[in-house]
Image (cartoon, rainbow, N blue to C red; front, side, top):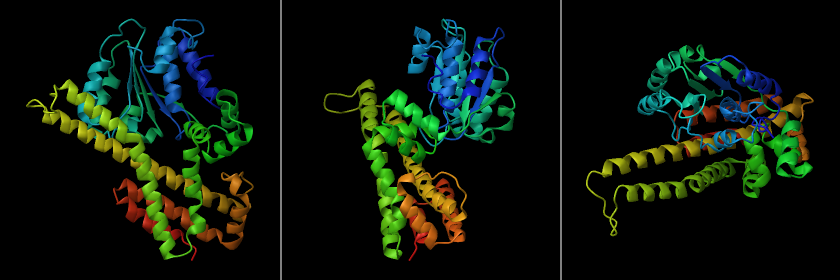
Amino acid sequence: MSVWNDLVGQEPVVAELSAAAAGPAAPAHAWLFTGPPGSGRVAAARAFAAALQCRETPRGCGYCASCHQVLQGTHADVEVVRPQGLSFGIKDARALVLRASSSPSGSAWQIVLFEEADRATEGAANALLKAIEEPPQRTVWLLCTPSPEDLLVTIRSRCRLVTLRTPPIAAVADMLVQRDGVDRDTAEVVARAAQGHISRARRLASDPRMRKVRDDVVAVPRRLTGVGPAVAAAETLVKAAEAERNAQTAELAESETSALRKALGESEKGRMPRGTAGALKDLEARQKSRATRVLRDALDRTLLDLASYYRDVLTLQLGAGSDLVNIDLGPELRTAAQNGRPEDTLKRLDAIMMCRERLDANVNPLLAFEALTLTLRTG
Protein backbone atom coordinates (compact mmCIF):
# COMPACT_ATOMS: atom_id res chain seq x y z
CA MET A 1 0.00 0.00 0.00
CA SER A 2 1.33 3.44 -0.94
CA VAL A 3 0.01 6.70 -2.35
CA TRP A 4 1.28 5.66 -5.80
CA ASN A 5 -1.04 2.64 -6.14
CA ASP A 6 -3.58 4.46 -8.33
CA LEU A 7 -0.98 5.31 -10.98
CA VAL A 8 -1.30 2.61 -13.61
CA GLY A 9 1.49 2.12 -16.14
CA GLN A 10 3.37 5.25 -15.01
CA GLU A 11 6.52 3.76 -13.50
CA PRO A 12 8.93 6.52 -14.70
CA VAL A 13 6.64 9.21 -13.24
CA VAL A 14 6.39 7.38 -9.92
CA ALA A 15 10.18 7.10 -9.74
CA GLU A 16 10.63 10.83 -10.50
CA LEU A 17 8.06 12.02 -7.98
CA SER A 18 9.16 9.61 -5.26
CA ALA A 19 12.72 10.87 -5.56
CA ALA A 20 11.58 14.51 -5.45
CA ALA A 21 9.46 13.93 -2.33
CA ALA A 22 12.20 12.02 -0.51
CA GLY A 23 15.14 14.17 -1.56
CA PRO A 24 17.03 16.34 0.93
CA ALA A 25 16.46 19.49 -1.12
CA ALA A 26 13.18 21.38 -1.22
CA PRO A 27 10.97 20.42 -4.19
CA ALA A 28 10.39 22.80 -7.07
CA HIS A 29 7.83 25.45 -6.15
CA ALA A 30 5.59 24.73 -9.18
CA TRP A 31 4.83 21.52 -11.06
CA LEU A 32 2.86 20.96 -14.26
CA PHE A 33 1.24 17.52 -14.67
CA THR A 34 0.22 16.80 -18.26
CA GLY A 35 -1.14 13.80 -20.08
CA PRO A 36 -4.11 12.61 -22.14
CA PRO A 37 -7.53 12.24 -20.50
CA GLY A 38 -7.62 9.25 -18.17
CA SER A 39 -3.83 8.99 -17.86
CA GLY A 40 -4.01 9.85 -14.16
CA ARG A 41 -2.46 13.32 -14.07
CA VAL A 42 -4.70 14.43 -11.17
CA ALA A 43 -4.05 11.16 -9.34
CA ALA A 44 -0.31 11.73 -9.80
CA ALA A 45 -0.54 15.27 -8.44
CA ARG A 46 -2.62 14.09 -5.47
CA ALA A 47 -0.17 11.27 -4.70
CA PHE A 48 2.75 13.70 -4.89
CA ALA A 49 0.97 16.09 -2.52
CA ALA A 50 0.48 13.22 -0.08
CA ALA A 51 4.14 12.20 -0.34
CA LEU A 52 5.27 15.78 0.32
CA GLN A 53 3.12 16.00 3.45
CA CYS A 54 3.95 12.48 4.67
CA ARG A 55 6.24 12.28 7.69
CA GLU A 56 6.94 8.56 7.49
CA THR A 57 9.68 6.67 5.68
CA PRO A 58 9.37 6.03 2.81
CA ARG A 59 7.48 9.21 1.92
CA GLY A 60 3.99 8.50 0.66
CA CYS A 61 3.43 5.48 2.87
CA GLY A 62 -0.34 5.56 2.31
CA TYR A 63 -1.05 4.58 5.93
CA CYS A 64 -0.42 7.67 8.04
CA ALA A 65 -3.07 10.26 8.89
CA SER A 66 -1.49 12.83 6.59
CA CYS A 67 -1.52 10.54 3.54
CA HIS A 68 -5.09 9.49 4.27
CA GLN A 69 -6.27 13.10 4.60
CA VAL A 70 -4.64 14.22 1.36
CA LEU A 71 -6.04 11.28 -0.60
CA GLN A 72 -9.51 11.92 0.87
CA GLY A 73 -9.32 15.65 0.13
CA THR A 74 -9.57 16.75 3.78
CA HIS A 75 -6.00 17.88 4.53
CA ALA A 76 -5.93 21.42 5.95
CA ASP A 77 -2.76 22.36 4.06
CA VAL A 78 -3.71 20.97 0.64
CA GLU A 79 -6.07 23.23 -1.30
CA VAL A 80 -7.76 21.31 -4.11
CA VAL A 81 -9.28 23.45 -6.87
CA ARG A 82 -11.88 21.86 -9.18
CA PRO A 83 -13.43 24.34 -11.61
CA GLN A 84 -17.17 23.68 -11.59
CA GLY A 85 -18.08 25.61 -14.72
CA LEU A 86 -16.71 26.07 -18.20
CA SER A 87 -14.02 28.45 -16.97
CA PHE A 88 -12.14 29.64 -13.89
CA GLY A 89 -12.39 33.41 -13.61
CA ILE A 90 -10.18 36.18 -12.30
CA LYS A 91 -12.25 36.62 -9.12
CA ASP A 92 -11.71 32.96 -8.22
CA ALA A 93 -8.03 33.22 -9.12
CA ARG A 94 -7.44 36.17 -6.81
CA ALA A 95 -9.15 34.35 -3.93
CA LEU A 96 -6.98 31.30 -4.63
CA VAL A 97 -3.78 33.35 -4.64
CA LEU A 98 -4.75 34.78 -1.25
CA ARG A 99 -5.32 31.31 0.21
CA ALA A 100 -2.05 30.03 -1.26
CA SER A 101 -0.09 32.79 0.46
CA SER A 102 -0.94 31.52 3.94
CA SER A 103 1.56 29.50 5.93
CA PRO A 104 0.94 25.77 6.48
CA SER A 105 -0.92 25.09 9.71
CA GLY A 106 1.11 22.11 10.80
CA SER A 107 2.68 20.51 7.75
CA ALA A 108 5.82 21.00 5.76
CA TRP A 109 4.06 22.67 2.84
CA GLN A 110 1.05 24.68 1.79
CA ILE A 111 0.04 22.90 -1.43
CA VAL A 112 -2.35 24.10 -4.13
CA LEU A 113 -3.56 21.31 -6.42
CA PHE A 114 -5.31 22.93 -9.38
CA GLU A 115 -7.22 20.36 -11.43
CA GLU A 116 -7.97 21.37 -15.02
CA ALA A 117 -5.88 24.50 -14.84
CA ASP A 118 -6.47 24.92 -18.57
CA ARG A 119 -9.96 26.23 -17.70
CA ALA A 120 -8.44 29.41 -16.27
CA THR A 121 -9.36 32.48 -18.32
CA GLU A 122 -6.59 34.75 -19.57
CA GLY A 123 -7.23 37.18 -16.73
CA ALA A 124 -7.20 34.37 -14.16
CA ALA A 125 -3.98 32.95 -15.62
CA ASN A 126 -2.29 36.35 -15.34
CA ALA A 127 -3.44 36.62 -11.74
CA LEU A 128 -1.93 33.21 -10.99
CA LEU A 129 1.31 34.01 -12.79
CA LYS A 130 2.65 36.43 -10.20
CA ALA A 131 1.92 33.99 -7.37
CA ILE A 132 3.75 31.22 -9.24
CA GLU A 133 6.65 33.53 -10.10
CA GLU A 134 7.14 34.64 -6.49
CA PRO A 135 5.53 32.02 -4.26
CA PRO A 136 5.86 32.05 -0.47
CA GLN A 137 8.75 29.91 0.75
CA ARG A 138 6.50 27.05 1.94
CA THR A 139 3.98 27.00 -0.95
CA VAL A 140 3.99 24.41 -3.75
CA TRP A 141 1.74 24.69 -6.81
CA LEU A 142 0.58 21.54 -8.65
CA LEU A 143 -1.16 22.34 -11.94
CA CYS A 144 -2.89 19.75 -14.12
CA THR A 145 -3.64 20.16 -17.84
CA PRO A 146 -3.91 17.82 -20.85
CA SER A 147 -1.05 19.60 -22.63
CA PRO A 148 1.63 22.17 -21.68
CA GLU A 149 0.32 24.38 -24.50
CA ASP A 150 -2.96 24.77 -22.60
CA LEU A 151 -1.27 27.26 -20.23
CA LEU A 152 0.44 30.59 -20.77
CA VAL A 153 4.03 30.07 -21.80
CA THR A 154 5.09 32.31 -18.90
CA ILE A 155 3.41 29.93 -16.44
CA ARG A 156 4.63 26.66 -17.91
CA SER A 157 8.19 27.98 -18.17
CA ARG A 158 8.21 28.34 -14.39
CA CYS A 159 6.96 24.83 -13.71
CA ARG A 160 8.72 21.49 -13.59
CA LEU A 161 7.01 19.32 -16.20
CA VAL A 162 5.69 15.83 -15.42
CA THR A 163 4.36 14.03 -18.49
CA LEU A 164 2.11 11.00 -18.17
CA ARG A 165 1.27 8.58 -20.97
CA THR A 166 -1.88 6.70 -21.85
CA PRO A 167 -1.72 3.53 -19.73
CA PRO A 168 -1.34 0.26 -21.64
CA ILE A 169 -4.61 -1.62 -22.10
CA ALA A 170 -3.18 -4.68 -20.36
CA ALA A 171 -2.18 -2.62 -17.31
CA VAL A 172 -5.68 -1.13 -17.02
CA ALA A 173 -7.27 -4.58 -17.32
CA ASP A 174 -4.92 -5.96 -14.65
CA MET A 175 -5.86 -3.09 -12.34
CA LEU A 176 -9.57 -3.80 -12.76
CA VAL A 177 -9.07 -7.49 -11.99
CA GLN A 178 -6.71 -7.10 -9.06
CA ARG A 179 -8.15 -4.05 -7.31
CA ASP A 180 -11.81 -4.00 -8.31
CA GLY A 181 -12.49 -7.72 -8.61
CA VAL A 182 -13.73 -7.49 -12.21
CA ASP A 183 -13.69 -10.74 -14.18
CA ARG A 184 -10.92 -10.92 -16.76
CA ASP A 185 -13.11 -10.97 -19.89
CA THR A 186 -15.11 -7.90 -18.83
CA ALA A 187 -11.95 -6.11 -17.71
CA GLU A 188 -10.29 -6.54 -21.11
CA VAL A 189 -13.38 -5.42 -23.03
CA VAL A 190 -13.96 -2.25 -20.97
CA ALA A 191 -10.24 -1.41 -20.85
CA ARG A 192 -10.20 -1.40 -24.65
CA ALA A 193 -13.49 0.49 -24.86
CA ALA A 194 -12.15 3.16 -22.49
CA GLN A 195 -8.95 3.38 -24.58
CA GLY A 196 -6.75 3.50 -21.51
CA HIS A 197 -8.93 6.04 -19.63
CA ILE A 198 -8.69 4.61 -16.12
CA SER A 199 -11.67 6.25 -14.43
CA ARG A 200 -13.92 5.56 -17.42
CA ALA A 201 -12.83 1.93 -17.51
CA ARG A 202 -13.82 1.64 -13.86
CA ARG A 203 -17.23 3.20 -14.50
CA LEU A 204 -17.87 0.94 -17.47
CA ALA A 205 -16.88 -2.10 -15.41
CA SER A 206 -19.07 -1.20 -12.43
CA ASP A 207 -22.09 0.46 -14.03
CA PRO A 208 -24.22 -1.58 -16.47
CA ARG A 209 -26.09 1.61 -17.43
CA MET A 210 -22.86 3.22 -18.62
CA ARG A 211 -22.03 0.15 -20.70
CA LYS A 212 -25.49 0.26 -22.30
CA VAL A 213 -25.10 3.95 -23.15
CA ARG A 214 -21.80 3.22 -24.87
CA ASP A 215 -23.22 0.18 -26.65
CA ASP A 216 -26.03 2.38 -27.98
CA VAL A 217 -23.51 4.91 -29.30
CA VAL A 218 -21.37 2.40 -31.21
CA ALA A 219 -24.58 0.88 -32.61
CA VAL A 220 -25.43 4.17 -34.34
CA PRO A 221 -23.35 3.65 -37.52
CA ARG A 222 -25.34 0.59 -38.55
CA ARG A 223 -28.58 2.60 -38.23
CA LEU A 224 -27.53 5.50 -40.48
CA THR A 225 -29.14 4.17 -43.65
CA GLY A 226 -30.87 7.38 -44.77
CA VAL A 227 -31.80 10.95 -43.91
CA GLY A 228 -34.67 10.05 -41.56
CA PRO A 229 -32.70 7.55 -39.46
CA ALA A 230 -29.74 9.96 -39.35
CA VAL A 231 -31.85 12.80 -37.93
CA ALA A 232 -33.49 10.45 -35.44
CA ALA A 233 -30.08 9.13 -34.33
CA ALA A 234 -28.82 12.67 -33.69
CA GLU A 235 -31.80 13.42 -31.46
CA THR A 236 -31.32 10.17 -29.55
CA LEU A 237 -27.63 10.87 -28.90
CA VAL A 238 -28.24 14.41 -27.66
CA LYS A 239 -31.15 13.33 -25.43
CA ALA A 240 -28.98 10.60 -23.91
CA ALA A 241 -26.29 13.17 -23.08
CA GLU A 242 -28.90 15.52 -21.60
CA ALA A 243 -30.27 12.69 -19.44
CA GLU A 244 -26.75 12.00 -18.17
CA ARG A 245 -26.32 15.72 -17.45
CA ASN A 246 -29.58 15.86 -15.50
CA ALA A 247 -28.71 12.75 -13.50
CA GLN A 248 -25.38 14.26 -12.44
CA THR A 249 -26.48 17.82 -11.70
CA ALA A 250 -30.17 18.03 -10.75
CA GLU A 251 -29.94 16.51 -7.26
CA LEU A 252 -26.72 18.35 -6.45
CA ALA A 253 -28.17 21.70 -7.56
CA GLU A 254 -31.28 21.16 -5.43
CA SER A 255 -29.25 20.36 -2.31
CA GLU A 256 -26.92 23.33 -2.88
CA THR A 257 -29.84 25.72 -3.28
CA SER A 258 -31.61 24.37 -0.19
CA ALA A 259 -28.45 24.64 1.93
CA LEU A 260 -27.78 28.21 0.78
CA ARG A 261 -31.37 29.31 1.42
CA LYS A 262 -31.17 27.97 4.96
CA ALA A 263 -27.79 29.60 5.53
CA LEU A 264 -29.20 32.94 4.34
CA GLY A 265 -32.10 32.78 6.79
CA GLU A 266 -35.06 31.33 4.91
CA SER A 267 -38.27 31.57 6.93
CA GLU A 268 -40.59 28.67 7.64
CA LYS A 269 -42.89 29.99 4.89
CA GLY A 270 -40.04 29.99 2.36
CA ARG A 271 -39.46 33.75 2.35
CA MET A 272 -35.93 35.07 1.98
CA PRO A 273 -34.47 38.10 3.82
CA ARG A 274 -33.73 41.21 1.82
CA GLY A 275 -30.35 41.38 0.14
CA THR A 276 -30.04 37.64 -0.46
CA ALA A 277 -31.22 37.56 -4.08
CA GLY A 278 -27.72 38.27 -5.39
CA ALA A 279 -26.19 35.26 -3.64
CA LEU A 280 -28.92 32.99 -4.98
CA LYS A 281 -28.43 34.33 -8.52
CA ASP A 282 -24.66 33.75 -8.27
CA LEU A 283 -25.29 30.15 -7.22
CA GLU A 284 -27.77 29.66 -10.05
CA ALA A 285 -25.24 30.99 -12.56
CA ARG A 286 -22.55 28.61 -11.27
CA GLN A 287 -24.96 25.69 -11.44
CA LYS A 288 -25.95 26.56 -15.00
CA SER A 289 -22.31 26.77 -16.04
CA ARG A 290 -21.58 23.42 -14.39
CA ALA A 291 -24.56 21.80 -16.15
CA THR A 292 -23.33 23.12 -19.49
CA ARG A 293 -19.89 21.71 -18.83
CA VAL A 294 -21.27 18.28 -17.86
CA LEU A 295 -23.37 18.20 -21.05
CA ARG A 296 -20.35 19.16 -23.16
CA ASP A 297 -18.30 16.40 -21.55
CA ALA A 298 -21.06 13.83 -22.16
CA LEU A 299 -21.39 14.87 -25.81
CA ASP A 300 -17.63 14.71 -26.26
CA ARG A 301 -17.50 11.18 -24.86
CA THR A 302 -20.19 10.23 -27.36
CA LEU A 303 -18.11 11.61 -30.22
CA LEU A 304 -14.98 9.81 -29.06
CA ASP A 305 -16.90 6.52 -28.86
CA LEU A 306 -18.17 7.07 -32.41
CA ALA A 307 -14.62 7.87 -33.52
CA SER A 308 -13.40 4.58 -32.02
CA TYR A 309 -15.83 2.70 -34.27
CA TYR A 310 -14.54 4.32 -37.45
CA ARG A 311 -10.97 4.06 -36.22
CA ASP A 312 -11.44 0.29 -36.03
CA VAL A 313 -12.97 0.22 -39.52
CA LEU A 314 -10.01 2.18 -40.91
CA THR A 315 -7.55 -0.11 -39.13
CA LEU A 316 -9.08 -3.11 -40.87
CA GLN A 317 -9.26 -1.37 -44.25
CA LEU A 318 -5.58 -0.44 -44.14
CA GLY A 319 -4.47 -3.76 -42.64
CA ALA A 320 -2.63 -1.86 -39.92
CA GLY A 321 -2.56 -4.83 -37.57
CA SER A 322 -3.45 -2.72 -34.52
CA ASP A 323 -5.76 -4.16 -31.89
CA LEU A 324 -9.42 -3.21 -32.20
CA VAL A 325 -10.98 -0.92 -29.59
CA ASN A 326 -14.44 -2.44 -30.04
CA ILE A 327 -13.27 -6.02 -30.08
CA ASP A 328 -16.77 -7.33 -29.32
CA LEU A 329 -17.98 -5.86 -32.66
CA GLY A 330 -15.37 -7.69 -34.73
CA PRO A 331 -17.68 -9.26 -37.37
CA GLU A 332 -19.67 -6.05 -37.88
CA LEU A 333 -16.49 -3.98 -38.20
CA ARG A 334 -15.03 -6.36 -40.79
CA THR A 335 -18.21 -6.17 -42.84
CA ALA A 336 -18.17 -2.36 -42.69
CA ALA A 337 -14.50 -2.35 -43.72
CA GLN A 338 -15.16 -4.62 -46.70
CA ASN A 339 -18.15 -2.56 -47.87
CA GLY A 340 -16.45 0.83 -47.69
CA ARG A 341 -13.35 2.72 -48.75
CA PRO A 342 -10.62 4.14 -46.49
CA GLU A 343 -11.20 7.59 -48.02
CA ASP A 344 -14.84 7.56 -46.88
CA THR A 345 -13.89 6.39 -43.39
CA LEU A 346 -11.38 9.23 -43.09
CA LYS A 347 -14.08 11.71 -44.11
CA ARG A 348 -16.33 10.36 -41.36
CA LEU A 349 -13.56 10.72 -38.79
CA ASP A 350 -12.97 14.29 -39.98
CA ALA A 351 -16.70 14.97 -39.58
CA ILE A 352 -16.58 13.78 -35.97
CA MET A 353 -13.65 16.08 -35.23
CA MET A 354 -15.50 18.95 -36.91
CA CYS A 355 -18.50 18.30 -34.67
CA ARG A 356 -16.24 18.59 -31.61
CA GLU A 357 -14.99 21.94 -32.88
CA ARG A 358 -18.54 23.17 -33.47
CA LEU A 359 -19.55 22.24 -29.92
CA ASP A 360 -16.52 24.14 -28.60
CA ALA A 361 -17.78 27.14 -30.61
CA ASN A 362 -21.18 26.92 -28.84
CA VAL A 363 -23.11 25.58 -31.83
CA ASN A 364 -26.50 24.14 -30.80
CA PRO A 365 -25.76 20.46 -29.95
CA LEU A 366 -28.75 19.06 -31.85
CA LEU A 367 -27.83 20.99 -35.01
CA ALA A 368 -24.20 19.92 -34.72
CA PHE A 369 -25.14 16.27 -34.29
CA GLU A 370 -27.66 16.34 -37.13
CA ALA A 371 -24.98 17.69 -39.45
CA LEU A 372 -22.69 14.91 -38.24
CA THR A 373 -25.07 11.98 -38.61
CA LEU A 374 -26.12 13.17 -42.07
CA THR A 375 -22.45 13.08 -43.07
CA LEU A 376 -21.95 9.63 -41.52
CA ARG A 377 -24.97 8.01 -43.18
CA THR A 378 -24.39 5.20 -45.63
CA GLY A 379 -27.63 5.52 -47.57
